[in-house]
Image (cartoon, rainbow, N blue to C red; front, side, top):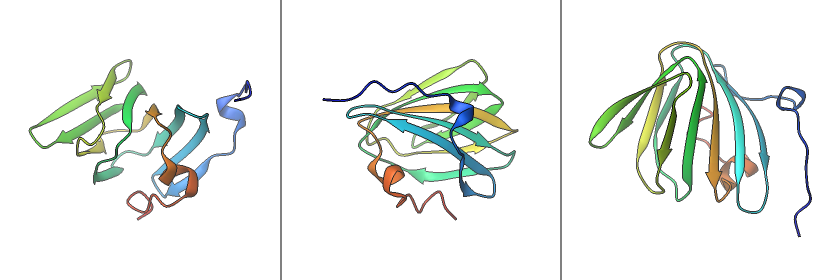
Amino acid sequence: MSQIRHWKMEGAPPEVINPKMTRRMLWGERLMAAWIEFKAGAVVPTHQHENEQLTYCISGTMRFTFPDRELILRGGEVLLIPGNVPHGAEMLEEVVEMDFFSPPRQDWISGTDSYLRK
């Protein structure tokens, strides 16, 4: 049985993924939340994963690329990406966003998310 956990985002130590990306994470058995801060010009290379992803852009502007289109996500907007859909993103300015995944991203938990750490 899972435990109830109360967490303050700003109180968790940030994990520096690369010079333009930091994140803070919390996860349970079936859901993960990540608070991510990007510097302008940061790029998330095209990748895919089985996890369903919901991205909530808190501030800034992100350009997502998909096999069939590009999409601009701005502060206050939400994007739902089904599992196994290839996608990448470029930060057009400084961005603060939250990603939610179901199930939790095991590669993020274990630190084997090498596509982000370049």
